[in-house]
Length: 169
Image (cartoon, rainbow, N blue to C red):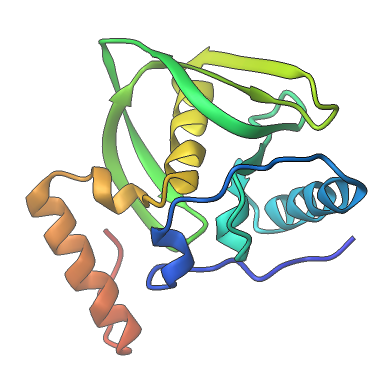
């Protein structure tokens, strides 16, 4: 297996909707193995293919209950109530922001075996599903921040990129 460098804020691949996966091949199975190794090494709870520069609608995740893969996932249900959480992202390393998301989410897609799969859950599982599918839609968590917080985060990230000491969010 191979470790991939994780693409970070500013990389254009993170802002483009990923293409649907049309066939499951041994190359795709190798990609999933490599994504899992990269995710665990980071370490992270989830990793979407665009985060390693592969513009395909696939992600891997493990919230402590064992790894799973979703191909061509879509959110099929969200709760009305929200759950605030200090959310981070492997593509914005070292930064965390308090972000409200629906506390429950359900997603439907295809598993690596080609069969339909559905994952759903409250709190952390729901958040991971939403976060990773956002990546597949070309959206970073920065886009979910309230306008003032987003403006401040973008300013801090630009300052960090220029080598200024900005602390943490």
